[in-house]
Length: 212
Length: 304
Image 1 (spheres, chains in turn green, orange):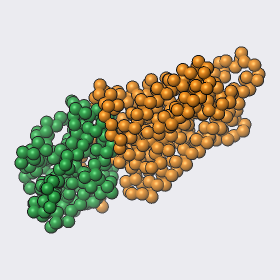
Image 2 (image 1 turned 30 degrees about the vertical axis):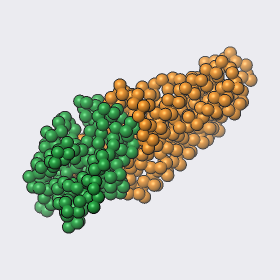
Image 3 (image 1 turned 90 degrees about the vertical axis):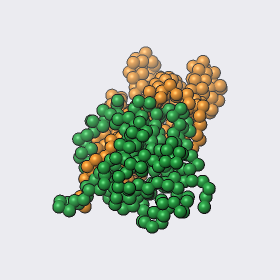
Image 4 (image 1 turned 135 degrees about the vertical axis):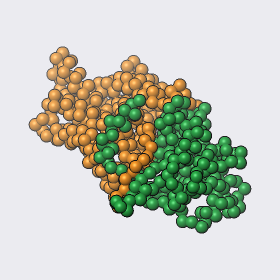
């Protein structure tokens, strides 16, 4: 057993009801400004009426073991703590957005007020004080489990042993530390369920945002 | 199986049109210096005007391009962190090194060139050469290390961006050489006029070589992506047939590459300066549109 902790999260999608309380808790806990999210829930509908089924996919920073964002940050503002949490030093970040371009999960954003990169840090200020991340504490259905992946007796390690889990975009080679139980690969595929025509109609709107 | 996304969060583009423009201007400036160095090192007197025109555009473009990079930063006043904090696994750090070295060598090279100190500026051309190569290559590495979008994350991107930069620089300098010919040739001797005309034609031949290499890279990228993952295949379709089809497919490939190649290949029209001027303009616009389509346009495809 390693002495160092390695934080990770398991999200049981069979339990997730898509209530967005994790998104709200995250925004409140971390004072996330409007229009940006550190954690959100993608809601999709699969199948045809009358057999259509709604699915929720909570998305947050995977605090990857092999974090591309840390590798590409030109000013070393992004760094990894020994417990695996990927951090951003707000005093060093220049807001070049290269970490956003490198992240295959699109979980970073530029704070519209402070103008530097931000993301989910697994609520490090809470876990350093023995608490759980805000999203885990607030989840009404108990879909999120947080803990030390290096401790074989921890609840998360037991869950990983007893359940079949998957990660988002394993092909990116980033070794994410957020695992999903019951992840439907079609729901996880960013191109499925998106009407490209819809994107065409919203291009101008998107570009407006770009030029702002 | 039918899937509809009912709710997702919109995201800001990581590489904005300002960055596409920065890539374009930086590539063109670097390409102009490469041409100027080539003209200097080949040592032929005929190419001296090219070396001087290239040098002038190096100054103008270098003054514009980095400003765009600073404007795009979330914290523009922290731009100097790029030269005090280093992460050598980031291509942006290497870029800042080249961005610092480039004006030092380029300004010395240009100063001695205009002072006429031949041996000194030739020596400086040798020093500037690796810096200029790094300067135009690093942006390709910046894009290719962006894992977020499959259209960026291809190994050919650095080489493609270099040949695109060279194409823009040659096309731009040909346009300037043609304007110079139109404005000044009336007071030149027949011999001088003939020499200048020959240089313009040589430049267009040189450009055709880079355009063919560009086409090869586009072909390689398309094949590589279409036979890759679903995501990469969709990104390839998106560039050529989808949303970016009009810009990348029509403006860059049809008007910016195939049309100029056709004109340069046809003996009846490949010496008509007005037609060549229009074609060079299409090449420059085509490469700008390529930079926009690949860097900014690719982000229209959903990532998460």
